Amino acid sequence: MGSPMRTEPLPGETPLRVPGGPYSVVVLLRGYAEPEGAGGAVRADGSVTLVLPRAWAPAARPRSARPESVETEAALREAASGPILVDTGGPWAGEALLAALAGQGVGPGDVGLVVGTHGHSDHVGNLGLFPGALLLVSHDLCLPGGLYLPHALSEERPLRLGPGLEVWATPGHGGQRDVSVVVEGTALGTVVVAGDVFERHGDEESWQALSEDPVAQERSRRRVLAAADLVVPGHGAPFRVIRGGPRPCGPETRDMDAAAGH
Ligand SMILES: [Fe+2]
Image (cartoon, rainbow, N blue to C red; front, side):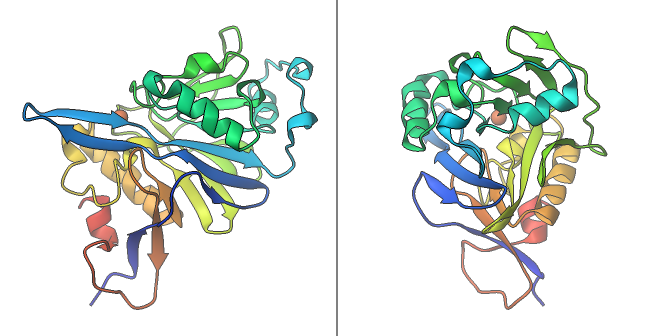
């Protein structure tokens, strides 16, 4: 008897565009993590994802016209009306990131909000490219210039950025303050950009060793799998979460309990 839920990697190279409304999702750079040499070293970089409002166009919001609300909800809504970057990769990938953004018609000054899913160097290594953006790194929310704003994000209370667009608290991997971005209404359903809640598709045997809090992370993994139709993991290909229907055989397919790491 198979599980009614399974996961499968999504084929395709980056940039991988998932159209949607009110937001499209573009995986700009696909992260990787590969052992190198015999000493246990790993060469890695994190995935970088762009969330683009359908209504946004480069001329719609000149950089100099951006007001700066100091009220948290208004600041988030305002920032999320422009391009949103989820993670930035490591500092060695800055040029690749700018080129990938340019390929989508987005300049670094156009980015309204940068979300860092957690504070590891392969995920938030290029924050300095976006001094004009609102920054949400783990649970730290700050305006350009370093004015930090209060908020009430918790596992029970997401931060709402816009219609069908939320930041969820998904603790575990980097500690208690990791976050994920949830985008509803794309052509592939609900997309969850999950940082290292999922290191990669098929990481069931490896995620615990990298986790600051495996109990919290397994809870986060289950919550993401229950909501997502597509997961963008911190490294490697995005993977689909498929509910119902016959379960095909194959090494690339994981059932839900296995994917959560239970
Ligand atoms: Fe990490």
